[in-house]
Length: 76
Image (cartoon, rainbow, N blue to C red; front, side, top):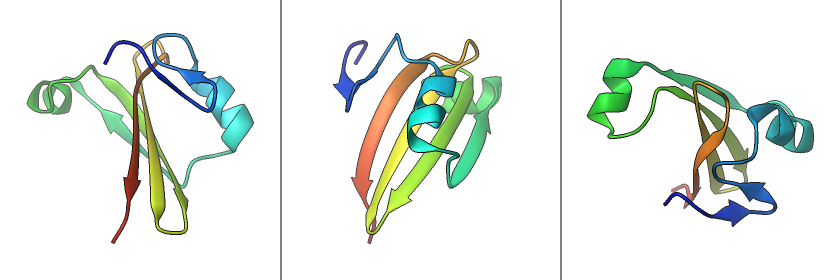
């Protein structure tokens, strides 16, 4: 999706520094290089992961550090 939001974090607008100010440092971060991006049909950049109990929030940004993807999953 090119539009969407979660708790005020807006795809295409929110910068990584803004969600880190709001949520703190992520539990984990992953860099997405050109090859990984192509394999996953996404843009190069990075993903931050936040976990709460059995839930995980993934926030992905492009090279300009603008939010491009939000994924909330239930961990097993």
